[in-house]
Image 1 (tube, rainbow, N blue to C red):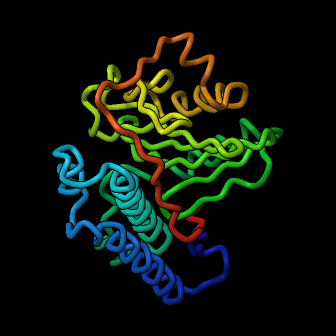
Image 2: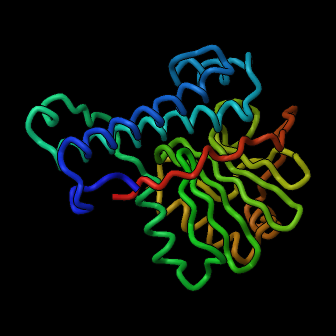
Length: 243
């Protein structure tokens, strides 16, 4: 949890704690980008689109780096709000606010009686366990860029928006099924409000975790000439950044 003046810390201690957290997040972002020898998310995305790096786990690392930077901006805004003065003048809260704390709150409220464990907020992902045994791991940067993976028993599936499979009818978003095959995405719609998109997917997964009915009902076709992969990175270390 981010430091807060209500915890009884003085201004100097708060500044130190904020700086320490911001530094840790900065290093985590650098570590996600380092394997690709890039220092900017846009460069990594271009390489994914060009096919010069494998799309997974590169796309999840791309999203993770963006999400971590969102969190850093969110914390900078908290610094400005809680400490003010010179700190406020130097704090840069530019960029979109982090979606993960908001999605975590909505999931906990809307699915309170269906959760199998508390929602875990890592630096770059949310991990949600449901009472059916379904486990969902999501990286949601914006309405247009996300990766939502889930496991049910031994089966693992994922919907994501990596720009790597132009042959898919739904490109760029697509489904990796439990047999490691690529299909057009039968459920999510980029550009849709994030909670609307995510809630619709969760509601379907709770009754149809392998998307057998969803694929049949929508006629989601295999993506011609495309190979899938199950390789997805684990979330970074769990750090709660709620207000």
